[in-house]
Image 1 (cartoon, rainbow, N blue to C red):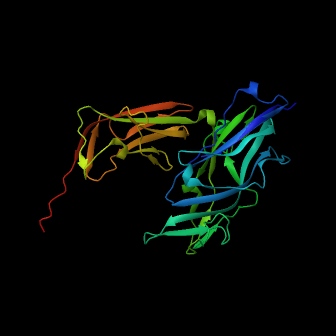
Image 2: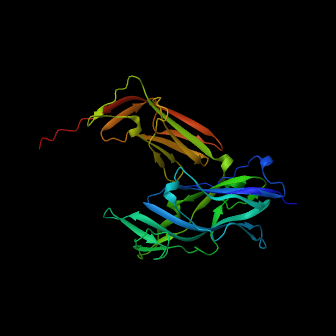
Image 3: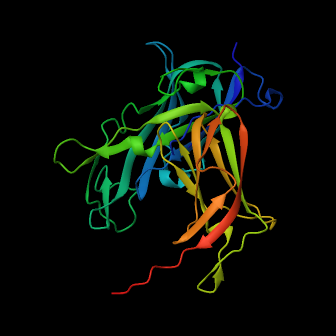
Length: 330
């Protein structure tokens, strides 16, 4: 007998795929589940990384396993770089039969990337000259090769969902209302093609984690009452000029944000979520040239983030000074 389940899929940049079990008392009772999928991304050294996802499907186990489409012929185009520290919902409360699924796949119909050129400008590479995701009136400078686009799709690594390692293929066991977080890693997806063709190649790297296992890190930045804030061009330096970076220490790209003081209590905060479990570093930069500072914590702050954890890092600025520019005697 089947149970109804709800599946949500959300994309995440180094983005994880998370599966969250919801209160089943509000879900369907006829042998199906509801699934939602969220997409996120871990940022890389790109100006733009746009993809169009047309289909998302689950593949049953074994050679005879059929496809269960969660999204079919329904394109969604998104810039993955806007998903760093954010998510977008690509499957919302889709009913599927409960059971074990061997694969989750994303079918991509097209993509383009914008990368920095040696002269300081940017260059665009697209999967086709007429890719609909290109900005109006803009032509691609080169080709982005995508070997499996529009065919079988790209496999999402389900290792963390099934209790394995990040790079394990794993499987998806659906037993209730679930939300899955998928990490679309930009820096691992796009790379130069070997040789001197000048082309870029796309081999999407998609990883999943249970959303209930996704973690959150809060960083709270404040200044000691004895700290005097200097003036720069008649403006007083504030802590919101600082930049807070959270970087995975075992690979992946950092995420940098400017802290905000939403309740005017003098504490400037930055939140990083959703996060995969792992080791991270919190780094602080003054964000202003020639501004130096001391804190009550040794920087960078090393963290071990565990499944489902919510960690707060309090950092107190104890000294702040503006270095005078050196005199030019020439």
